[in-house]
Length: 323
Image 1: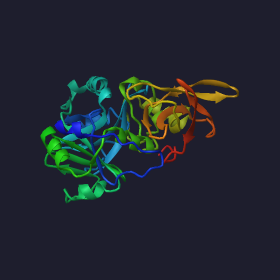
Image 2: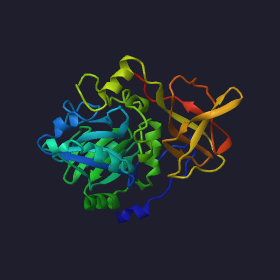
Image 3: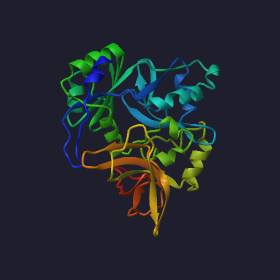
Image 4: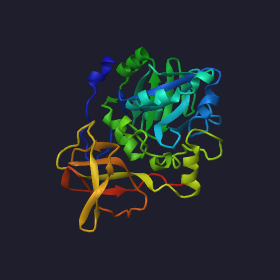
């Protein structure tokens, strides 16, 4: 997409208002597409969400696990053209595609990486803009060249053929911002971002997928179900994903892992690695991290590489319930 060269980085403080309407190309995001007669049944037996009950006009969170219940992919699932799309970080797709195809030879299903381009529409005016182009008022809307998907109250995803995406992007009058803004909203909404570095590391509940409606406990068998069920019914899960925020001595670089330490008395111990982060202009940053779910909300944190910093756990926008 040639238009991506016009993107700008927003330099905002942590309390600044955002533009009412923004658009960004999302090159670090992609999708896996499934089509064929057995697509619904095959996917139903592979993932944590209930594919059978997913309405055409809705999307849902889900996860694909290995046999031990560790997550290969956390994705947003929706009907796309004549099949399904699993929207997820681009870096996770190679391994996820390999694992998802393992048993496909026994079913009439085609599984492939999508060639579509992802655009993010953000801000309080996002839905009004989408409404101008569609007569539908559902949360997933078919377009001549792809789909429009509601992510939350201030975000819509457009998954379009490249030529249509470029035309749409170039003609859009919204502020053209870089993809860091999409990450900002993901963090604010505490929506999991499982890059390739996080694959096979967590069970779905550690990513809060039960709170996001991404796990069905009544749908029947799927890969990794035994572990997921034990985590619910026997209270075996000891971790959850949290929003954290604090000051920085220097901005956090994109694509570089950053770890946090937590205070234990007068000492500091490793707490985990940020799954994603966003830099503000006022020498602060926020991120997502998986921590023990029994930590006190007042627990002090710091960046391992910047030990003079102080970070804290922020409230989640949802309750960590099982359903």
